[in-house]
Length: 103
Image (cartoon, rainbow, N blue to C red; front, side):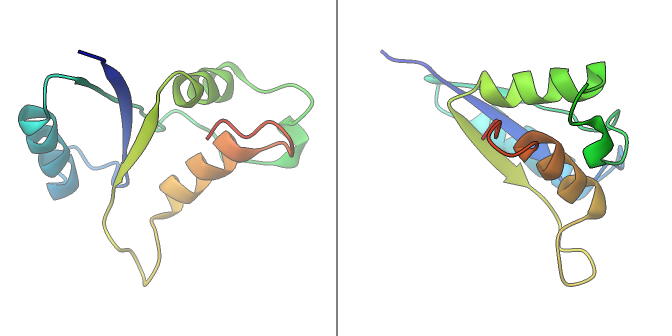
């Protein structure tokens, strides 16, 4: 049986978030061939292209965690008719600088 690594990002940083509870339920019900792990982005500073030449440790670790999985699952609330700002910031970190997209 082939195992696939699935990283999941929870769009809400709140500890009691319903999206966090939903993610935990998804992990419990996932088939055994899916190795599920949360990829946290709570320690990322606000993205700026000023970091592109020398990513901070939190940015490097986040990009490495994204690159190490076979798939990424987003479990997120709608926020102000869009995605939460923290999640957008995480997507920016993972996809920048140009040519080094971790997704």
